[in-house]
Length: 439
Picture 1 (cartoon, rainbow, N blue to C red):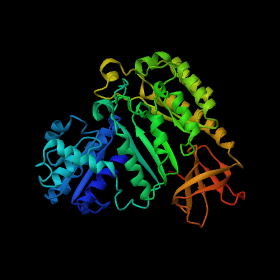
Picture 2: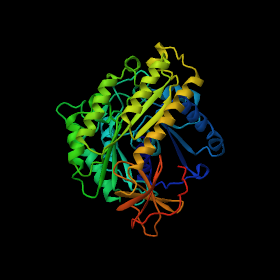
Picture 3: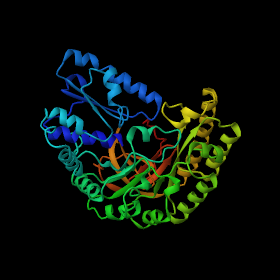
């Protein structure tokens, strides 16, 4: 989501005549876009913006814009007192305050409702910043802003505001614009993406939106994330199964495998519900890959409750498990009402147990690809090898002198590991063990 927001800001600045630089000391405007899902991320963001103060002292005309979840939907006033050298505070996904400031009052003079329309018009067609135009193969398109579910561990609803679905016309217009700029793959984004349309009376849901987006010429692959088990319907499964451009890769977090922990997290489902959902997805979408998120050490989680999570992961054998150790987050329900009573050492032990288990699972899953021919969309060249992804979102590296950027090509998998695979365009087996690439 933050990547998409930053692209939108960059596009807005180029409309005003600015060029991109990756060197802060050369900039006339610096935008620091922040993510504060964890306390450590907020601390890092505050440290980073504070480090910009010497540049402001040296150049008083420098404009510093703090944007994103650190500001949130209601946090600008508190930050102004703490960070007086920051010129503009922007909530998530909104380049409006910066554009208004840089326009020296021209936009502020327009009535507020017209100002909103002008910014919305800028949002309808996203022209990528110049340094990404024609270079970006895969792009992210937000379709739902904010979140209204409010899991007890999550700060997002308090920082990004209530759930708001974007109009279909705006989404499709943006995707057409991206396709015209060379983008081949789009990922539809939402904090809970499968709740798209639920805040709009009689509006389309995610399944219907996928069918509409599927008709956009130039886009060859469509993905979406992150889903919630409660809203992942059979209608949505049917859309993924029936639409060739929609990739068979589902991100649907379980977060924990114990029913009491899930209840304390306010997730709204049980372990059995999640197991049943995975079974339905695999039945409806054969050969689909499934990714999940897991938090270890949630307040009150006993060792036996953790082992329920371990057993679920062991049984379901999912393709990806994004693991996190619980950390107290000021402002969340869990921090206000629950005792963070699992030690840091114990959280780390549980984290490593799942990490080791998942590495074995993925290694076994990926071995099944050995010798298979799969279609890969190539994104860029990394250390002399082309990097791309399969429909199931497996990372693949290929050695080739051809320009493969933006192309979908069949490759034969010649080597597999838990985190990536190597392949050959001509199907020839590699005779040497590939060097591992750390990304």
